[in-house]
Length: 596
Ligand code: ATP
Ligand code: MG
Image (cartoon, rainbow, N blue to C red; front, side):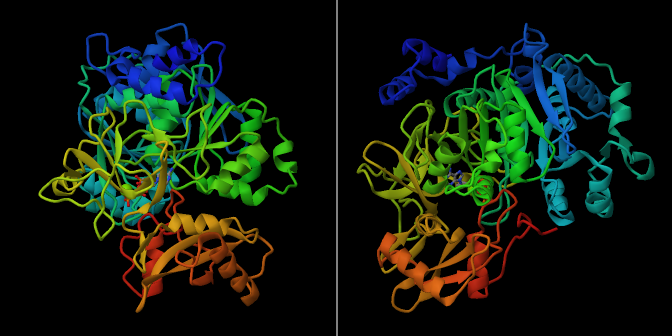
C-alpha cells in the first residue's frame, strides 16, 4: 500500500520525514487503501472477511492471530485458520437461533478469546455487534441494551448473576443470553455458549455484505453527558486498516498489544479489527491493570507495537518515575518494542518524555472519537513529535479549525461556518465527512446527528489550536473550556503544567464562577505516593502554576483529591468536579469508574 510505497521510495529505509508526510497525503485515496483489501469473493466488503477469512485462505493461515495470556500467566495461541473456524461456528450458532442481518448482538465480556469469536462471528453473520464494558453496573447495561435493541447477549455466569438476571423482564427484546464458560445450566433463560459452539459446523459462507451495511454500534464514553450510540458500517475496515499502518506503524509481522477495554471503540477498531486486517499477532491479556504485569506482558510476549492510553501511562509513571529507579522495566526485555502510541485524552508532554527515558521510545499521541471510528490526527512514526500536540491529520483526512462563538463552539450563521486561516488561533476542530469509518448516525437520535454538521463539516465538539506548521494542539472540550477575564483557558494546559511538579500525580481543572473574572481556574490535584497535602505545598503549587502559566491562566485555587472522578475509559470527568464544586446535579453517572 501507499505506506509501503513510501518506505520503498525512501531508500535506504529512513523514517518518513515532513516531506514524505506531504507526499503521503497527496498520494493517498481511500479507494486505493480499499484496493489493498480482498473484498468478498462475490463482491461487497465484510469486516470479518478482511480480518480473518482472507488470511485463513492464504499462506498466513498458520500464523498466530491471538496470543492469549490468561490471568494466571499461562499462554495459548489461536491461528488465523482456527479463528476462521471458531468465528464460522459462532455465525452458524446465530443462524440456528434465527438471528440474522442487522440484528444486534451485545457482548459483556472482559478481554478473552471468546470475545474475538463473538465479535467476528457476528460480523460474518452480518448481524451488528455492540460491546459493553464489563464493569458497567446493571443500570447502564439495561439502558444500552434497550437503546440498542439487543436480541442476543454473550456474557459469563458471574456477570449475568450480578448485572443481567434482575433486568431480563424489562428488556423483553433480549431473546438469547449465551453464557461463556460454566454455569449456564443453573441460570434459567440462558444457554451455554460452549455447547452451542461445539454443535455448530465450522464452515460458513459470509452472505453478501454491502460496504455500508451496519456492522458495529458503539456507545460514546459519556464524558460530557448521556452516552450516544454511534452507528458504524462494514467499510470502516478500510479506515482501520490504513490508519493502523500510518498512525501505529503496524505491519503484518508485528506482535501488537492494545490495552483499551473491549467495551470502547478503541478496543474494537484497534484491539480487534485493524491488527487482524493486517494479519498481525494480537496479544490478548486477561489480567488486571498492574504495572508489573504490563511490563511483563510487553517483555515476555515480545510486543513490537503498543497502543495504550494516558491513564495507563500515568499508572506506569507512578510505578516507575522518570528519576528512577528503573528495576521494574529492567526486569523484562523490552527490546522488541518499536512503537508506542496513546489515545483517549490529552497526553501530557511529561508522558512523552517519560516514554523516551523509561521505555527508550517516545509516546505518539493521536486523536479520534467514537464518532470518527478511526484515528484522525496523529504524531507519525519517524516524524518529529511535538510533545503535547496530537499531531497532524492522517492521509485522507481533511481537518480544519472553525471560528468559534462566545460559547466556545463553532459559530454557525445561517448554516455556514468560517475556517480560521491564521496559525495559532483556537477554534472548534472540524472534519470533512467522507472517510469510510465515519459514523452514520446516533441510533434513534437523528436530531443530535444532524446537529453535529454545519457548512459541510462534521463538528467535533473539541477546541484545538493549529500551529504554523500544521500540528494540532488540544485545548479542551468545548463544554470544558474555562472562560476567565476574557480568556478561554483549556483545562488540559493547566493540568499539564501542574503535572510537571514532582509532587503531582494527576490534576483536573475547572472554572469556578467569580464576580470579577466571570470564572477563575480551580485545580483538583492528586499527589504522588508518600507526598503529604499541606498548606505549604498548596502555596507552592499555586506559585508554580503562576510561574508556568502566567497569572491569567494559572489556578487561583488548589484542592487536594486523591480520587479524581474518571470515566471507565480513564478520562477525568471535569463535569463531575464542576457539579460537585457548584452543588449542581451530577447528571449521567453510568460511565463513572467505580459506579455499578
Ligand atoms: P461523550 O461524547 O459521551 O461525552 P467522549 O467524547 O469522552 O464521551 P469518546 O468518543 O470515547 O467519548 O472520546 C473522544 C474524545 O476524547 C474526543 O472528542 C476528545 O475530547 C478526547 N480525546 C481523544 N483522544 C484525545 C487526544 N489524543 N488528545 C486529547 N483529547 C482526546
Ligand atoms: Mg464525544
